[in-house]
Length: 485
Image (spheres, one colour):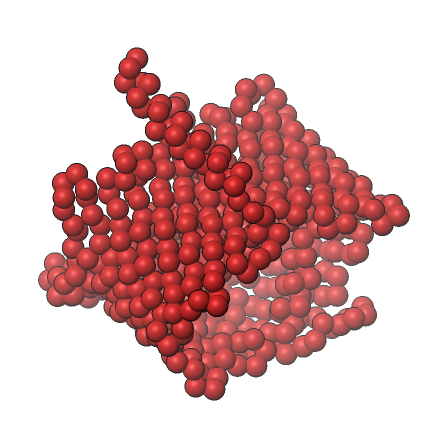
């Protein structure tokens, strides 16, 4: 009994610290870039995330589910991601996609209905160390004035107007504007809004797919400030209710399966906007059973509580100094214990020479017995449309109990990029990594190439490894190409 109380003390301290942290924060969002495939490969190579987690994030990027990828980046890699300003409902993904695709194709967006269309033919292939294909995605996209047609890995016909939308085919989280990730369903989703004096609208939607899943949804929107919705779900043998809301400083979703004691809760909280101070919180809470067709990552599903917190302070007038702190808290199912990971990241200096230092407490419940230290130096040079970057970093882990240091991981990288018209950019980057400080024993070579023109986009991401005196060999690679029309 005494041992159980002792184990509970660190958990209570962590939860209390998290609560105080949240209350003390101002409402301003964390500004960070979206996760790219090259970043996922880098986290995979340096051991920040496991192979299963990397493949999950890569698959979500393939499907265009950037919000879900960002959530996993915060959970798995303890890194802030995205702007945090995207709401659950009323998303402008269709308009953004149409505009971006037409800009890439050198066309302007039509203000009136037109018979003209644009689109692309895209393919993406990933390989493992043996050269076998581990993932393959193809897409033929046609964009019309109000409709899009996707063929290939995802087959979907979408129609959107100012007051309604319809989706036919493979439907998932994005099409249903769900605050909780969903399985892909074959079926139809319809939505229509009724304007009421400009104060908002009542949106009714229905869904039926080939597995017999039914969904009825109603939501209320008040401008861009607040949206709330309720969904009733019926599968072959379950009934559930989901309530979700989006507001200026975040979004919350609550999903209760009838007959189950614990609901599934997902929340993302952030601030209103500031270039000086910002924060964001993401979390999941659930029990043993998840309401279908909810789809959570395996790592999240086996923990009843998982939350991340990111804080950023930026002083542009003082060498553009940026200080960020992040924390991750999780509690496994059938356990009262809570573990936490804490990180502090400081960067400062002009583009000519910018220095970064980061310290990560691997496990807070063990009084930070193991700490990872990393230092990085980077220099950037601009030549008209060309930009050259040279960087070097070293990372090591200290064990306070054993009073030992791991062999440092050393990285040296260089990249050259060229900005082109239409927002396009060509880029080549190569990074040499010595995981154990000795390139003769272990060596990694990471490369990224991106080429674009008016009608073509091409990218190649590859990692090569050499270890234990063996010859250098490929570890994994990805080839992407897109023909624009």
